Length: 301
Image (spheres, rainbow, N blue to C red):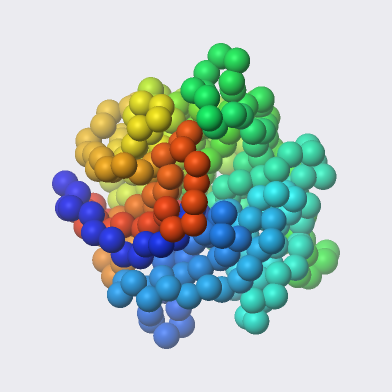
């Protein structure tokens, strides 16, 4: 069972896209995007936080190419940006050119293939549902371009997605899991040899909006739930394939938007939270909590 969450860092805006990474010096950091602050940041287990780069069009999902290049989704203009050691940001791929939509969350496999979800807006001040649902969007495959070193290439690999979020790739590289936030479900695809997606199916239907996710050694997902009832707080649930809930962490007065497992034994569950959906967001509303769990993660999102 999960322990009691404690504050790791607060006074953020809207933290998302967490990734645990251990550097060459053996020190572990939690990397994340503070989306509405327009910053990519990292924090260590003592709560020391650093800003890595400024992303004017708002950063979201992030990860690393096999050569160590840090890449991040630029939400507003739908581009993949590479971040240099000096914090310089440069575009390497244009997903928005594929469907005209903004992009959000991303997961990268060890081969550098990344899956990025595009999205269409809905009115967050009204209950999501009939008459206020985002239109369908896509999943794009983005990967290093072997013909243009330092650049990426992209193509669309899935359509009719309902606000895709919080993606995960299983350790064997064969399955892609993605939260369809306002469809209240987690969807699975098989990953083909060329990176294409096939055999779409429902992995779990949770009956509440689903967001960022992380996979543990028992094959369960910890899933961020932005709210249990619209206008109220959310939390985090641990779920098996098929939808069985086996653990739960409730939040008090905040929305829950992303999570990942990390720490020295991969048993630290980082919980990213901010303003309740439907309430005006302000700088300082966001925070990252950490709770210790029994089952470790896999060293991937």
